Image (cartoon, rainbow, N blue to C red; front, side, top):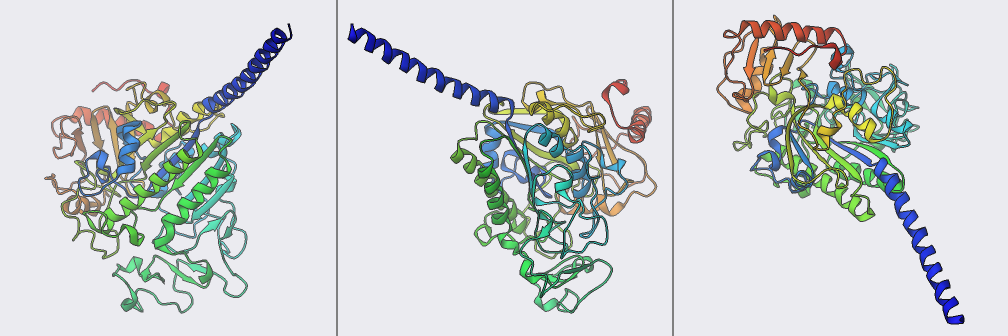
Length: 534
């Protein structure tokens, strides 16, 4: 009898332990299943053709190639603009940048572009229980004008939904060449060496690219010939604050370590990390371990460096045991450019590399090469392996797409141009957008894709240098002569935009221009527009 009682006691204890452990496991699965971690790795000036998985033969990108093999690769994904500030604004706000007249490429001392307290991707995720952080390039302005870099720097990311921030304030070719952590310049000894910044004229007596060209590792145009830091002259002038100056070569390691730290500290709760890298933006000064790592000079070497960062993040997620339930997205802010102000040998060492792939144009342009981006998403728990999708997707859609994944409700007025394309992101549907807006440099140059048709509307002040620069240097395709008239291309038959059909199909041009005009006037809502019959 005692043996029988003992047996039942053991069974009950065993079942109790099993039940408790099972409940814990189910609880964790339910928690993480509803709230996947979200990481967006945002590249800078990396083109469609810069990655191996998108056709590059000269730049090895094994980590990004693996990411695509383990998830979904989009072939018709777009940044909203072919320059950095507008694209970043759209991604975080779900609003086209042309609706905000200030959303142009900002100087390093510009005030904050996003209205504090407004609905943003990080603020929406934060309200849904996510811990949010931005690490890396910001370039969306800081402060409210007349910024004193030696005191509190706000408003900034912490006022638009991020809990933590560690920033490259603007671009790596602009002053100030310092990091900003939270509301303060990182490692600044302001009492004995205060930091001053100017974009109106030289301040202090530090060497510049104009006064001391012999100190430069490579030359620069006049715009990029301001204060010299790490033997490279920058846009603008700076004085003091040298304890806080960054080391360009260590930047990828600094951003990677900061990202790992955030992931480690928040491994047990849902988190959102916006890791905004600087590669392959000029000035290109990769860490020495990546020099010569590509077959196309410094531009390619910086892309290899970026791929290494991606690999480090993947390894950290795997080490912590949270890779399975982390959605990892990689894309870029705009198309590529070889010569962007520095004589760094990018053109001479291109070795035939087509940074925009088969597409025409690149950074600044309204052609496909300016805004059609590499876009990879991997989530082992939610996306099947090896999916390739040609669904049309825009980065402006990330706000409305990620919110339901995080169990968040979109507040009234949030993301006016953003659409929920979660089935596309998860590889469950090829029904993407009907149309996308592609903003070139400034507010006067646009591309408009509707299904397989692409219109660049007529413009009297279209900057011809933008169109010529990229075709002659980056992607030397046979192209029609630059004109102020409209361009019309059929992308399915002519992805390189070489054959202007505007003269053959004037009615299509008229219909598309009218439809596009309505989008410019009001935030786009799918239900507000009837299908365009072409």
